[in-house]
Amino acid sequence: MELWRAAHASGEAPTDGAGCYSPIHGGSRIISQVHGQGVNSIRVRPFFVSGMPFDPSYRQLETMMKKTVLNESHRRSGARMVDFGGWEMPLHYGSQIEEHHAVRRDAGMFDVSHMCAVDVEGTDAGAFLRRLLANNVERLKIPGKALYSAMLNESGGVIDDLIVYYLDASRFRVVINAGTADKDLAWMRARLDDWQLTVSITPRREGAHALAMLAVQGPNARQRVWQVLPECRAASAALKPFFSTSVGDYFIASTGYTGEDGYEITLPAEQAESLWRRLSEAGVRPCGLGARDTLRLEAGMNLYGQDMDETVSPLDAGLAWTVDLVSERDFVGKAALLARPQQYQFLGLLLLDRGVLRAHQPVHTAYGAGEITSGSFSPTMQQSIALARLPLAVAIADTVQVAVRDKLLSAQVVKPCFVRNGNILV
Amino acid sequence: MNIPADRKYTSTHEWIRSEADGTISIGITGHAQELLGDLVFIELPEVGSELAAGQEAAVVESVKAAADVYAPLAGTIVDLNQAAVDAPETVNQDAYTVWLFRMRPAAASDIDTLLDAAAYQQIIDAA
Image (cartoon, rainbow over all chains, first blue to last red; front, side, top):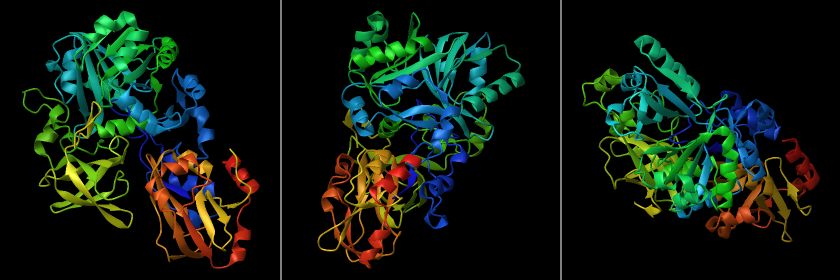
């Protein structure tokens, strides 16, 4: 048996994609080590994910990887750890599918401390983010409100997707992806330099004031959080979707990456282990990033590095709703987006035949070629689903053909939100 | 993890059991299913296919990954386990009981060239 293709294990809120999988873990080298039988057993498969099955180089990498404060907790719970953008993170704790169901039916929690909270503060903080981001932070008028946005380069490609929390007129918190954090910070600081604004940019992932992040998600997530943190109940119960509040050391947001109710809790790193343990004792199931990926796929949420990257326009990745091309405001990438209108639509696929859809499989339509950007098996729907970039003339309910190995399989085009709050929508 | 001593193995994580009728049953090892995670799809070859040793015979896919299963020996596919296709998770539950396909080897003595349980154990330990 030879492992030859692995869907990305990623699944960060919003994401943790590109650049996660360092080229030193190339499939050919790994497979040749596994088989040890020479080149006739080697086939280069471009989607081989490091830390995935049969990766003997993983043990050598272990010492080089960064670890979140919950690393030991994960190991004690039997997690299978993988390399995620240079961070050693849990893929699952036994069964990815059972973890997936726990979030849809009850409550699960994810360690997302490898993502990077960045405090953007100063009198020009708002002006800086207005110019930096494709979505318009001027829409944030109520303290605590959150906004999802892409950060673009000058050619309109997506450097990262992120969430901005508005705390007050001079204080914002931006949460960026793990694998992209270094390039994001370099980009932000370079723009700050160019624009000569008075803003401080403070990443909070490492060092004396490091923060940890736990995502507690599922229909019973709120109740379980209140059970463990009764002091947070009043403030967090009042949160509408996509808001945040601070209670003592806890920063609690009604955001997530699963399509379920729940909170994302940011807290001082040294308190994370205790909260993780208490939530676990309250019946919240530890879930790995594998389940996070299938949950976000079912919810139709983009994964950076897979559904979009620096070469992809947000307009072609289903993110037009997050791009403000209406207001007078200028922002990085705006001119490029205006010069090059949308070329693809971003839709869902439901596999009608047996099999599993995966990223990069070609899609044949009556109106030209498309491509799957994310695909897997949906544990909730018990069939394979995918997100795909398709020609603009393709319509919902059309049947298309997907090239899977040596076969063409039929798939139906659907709206790219398959499951929400436990309900199948397609 | 117990590796049954009543059968042979390949370095590519297939197990091979000799049956009384001279055919061989092929499955994937416990180590392989554990690394792949929850299996959700199995594609088997056609009965009658003649395969060379090492040729792709089947595909198993988990939520996260896909893997080829190879013919361990040259031979002809003579039987398929449709129950495994219908319930791939049974491979996770009992990898050494749930066979995937059966072959009639072109040369029965080829089976002696495969790894025994101890040799396969060493391969896993070295990985």
